Length: 415
Ligand SMILES: Cc1cc2nc3c(=O)[nH]c(=O)nc-3n(C[C@H](O)[C@H](O)[C@H](O)COP(=O)(O)OP(=O)(O)OC[C@H]3O[C@@H](n4cnc5c(N)ncnc54)[C@H](O)[C@@H]3O)c2cc1C
Image 1 (cartoon, helix red, strand yellow):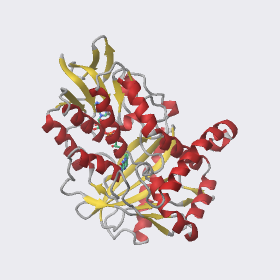
Image 2 (cartoon, protein in one colour):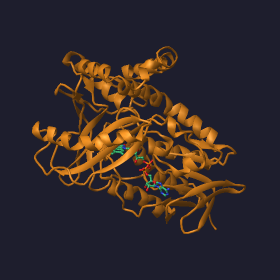
Image 3 (cartoon, protein in one colour):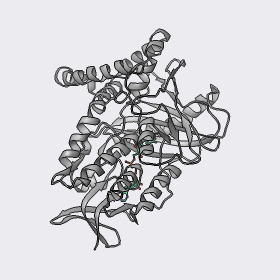
């Protein structure tokens, strides 16, 4: 049986950054993934400003073909557009990257492998806690052994299920599907739209500039824990593309062909992010932003934190790691989960609120705060315009969260 100090299951951004950080502390690390790399992954391909700052601090450079992106256009239900500015905060520059995941994830994995992590190409079936650590069973009968285990295996994590760290009935899930178009678009663009009977579509569409004269176009939908509702996103994609093309938001190009979808687990829902010497990072921990679906920044931040906690060699690293999540990520995850749930359960109320937000008088005053809150950039923003109201909104929503659960649970019931 092959032994490592740490086995990391999953070689997406979370797994590669965790493996890289651990190897740099002198640990022996096995990184196991069911896919051969480079591999594709459904994504809008935007790596946000917080992620970029952490990657740079780890000495990771921008992939050669990646574009820089910053301001975002949002098209509202009535067709008007608001530009959300992206500014430099204390802990991040106002710039993200756009890089196809096939390139980006391989880029990160190469850093981990060149530093000394060992790649094992296999689908992990089960993991088990045994006296001396963790045993990871592979389909060909081989077993791997380690003292610590990191589950970086995405939203539907085998590690989390094997170690009974999840309750799927409590998941707050999204499903999103993307395609590439041979087309161009100037700014990353997000669209919200009205459905029959005055309801807001329970998700949004995006069109992001991508490398090589392409546009990454997709639709995401919030489904709570009802996985069957995920098909709505796929059905909506074609119509969304035609609406954008008719409105000349994207230049003419071929209709979407190759579609790829994936799950997003948001708001830490139904998930305990670690137990004993096993830690969940990134999507496995359910850290996706419940408002806009970003998860790479949280995947990277949680992986660096998990590696630091493991490096300490303490008896119960999961307890310290859970505290890190609580202190650094949980307030926003809870506050934005509440907004997400209210919007999905009350599509008419959500439409009315959006129409108000897109009113020019309101949007010119709130654009910065809106961008900061929506993109979870209030922490580390310093004193830039919009940071204070975004922080106040988080606090107010946390108070409302307690009140709604106790006084008006009907507000969260999907009808
Ligand atoms: C359509 C879509 C669009 C998105 N757009 C964005 C965006 O623009 N920006 C953003 O920041 N986030 C976006 N997200 C979220 C983002 O993709 C995730 O948050 C991010 O990939 C999380 O990284 P991760 O390493 O935790 O998991 P993943 O990237 O999912 O990596 C998990 C890895 O684990 C491997 N694995 C899984 N199970 C096993 C197993 N049993 N054995 C071995 N290996 C296994 C998989 O092969 C995979 O390589 C989007 C998600 C979707 C679905």
